[in-house]
Length: 393
Image 1 (cartoon, rainbow, N blue to C red):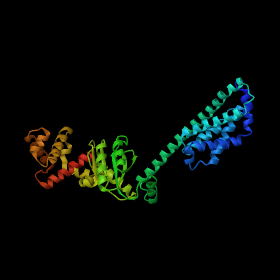
Image 2: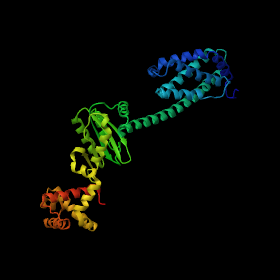
Image 3: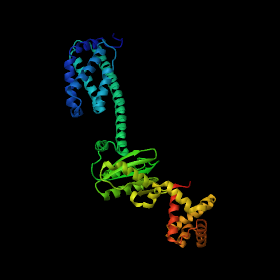
């Protein structure tokens, strides 16, 4: 039914155009392909599918202008969905609607010889109003579809990345397939980095960008307790550079696995990186390589045994009030850092040398272990590192 605002002349001309809508669809498809290179580049959107979309939209718009049908935007929404799924630019799709509007206008003018000037002036406004409605509906659906597809891509990529790090020992081919899909080389020099929870890819974005500029591949995945990264470089030297760049960017503890040569070893390397992370006390900011901390690795690998050894070695010291216990342990730690120099330890702690000596003697009396004895000093060092890395039970 024709609305009062619709031009009677436009309705009559539109009814005439409906009789030749098939040939108009062919013409419009040709014009779109000629003017929009992206349509030619699309291997999934065939000319037949494009021509079908043109026919549906032209029929719907002309049906409305002819007063035969209400506004039906299904064809516009279908076009928007199709173009988003095929990866065609939204600008190209909107240009196609303008080309469609221009074609309708041209065909209307061919048949408008007997239309009065007053009626003729009403036609452009009515035509471009309906073209705008259809292009708006197509654009809205295009954006909605693109958002859904982007989320699906993100979820799919996340699943592939999780496959890399989770190992899938029962199906090693899944790891290789995921690596290929993600663009990870099958050979090279690899390491895995595990950064303490709280570190995000955003914090390291500048370093990650620099890695990419150097041809270093990096894939990242956030777990509840760590941010994990797979690093692949052409050489061991590039791996060293990558670790240095990331080490400057992390805000907390991080661990690095031993180098390995292919994606099959990623899961085992992740375990190494997480252990290396724990080889520095909580609260420190440091990047620790797995092969650089053998004693700390021994302690974090065997936490129960480490706690038991610390309790046995330090004995009554651990039962002192917190303030006194902390002061003695701090003095012992600084003394070891200063390679057993009482003078250097006193200088670093801003104490008199006699204060340091007094505390070391008190440690000896409480534990039965003398720092001047190499074996007993080694036992004290092991117990101290256990406390620093694992805390006190």
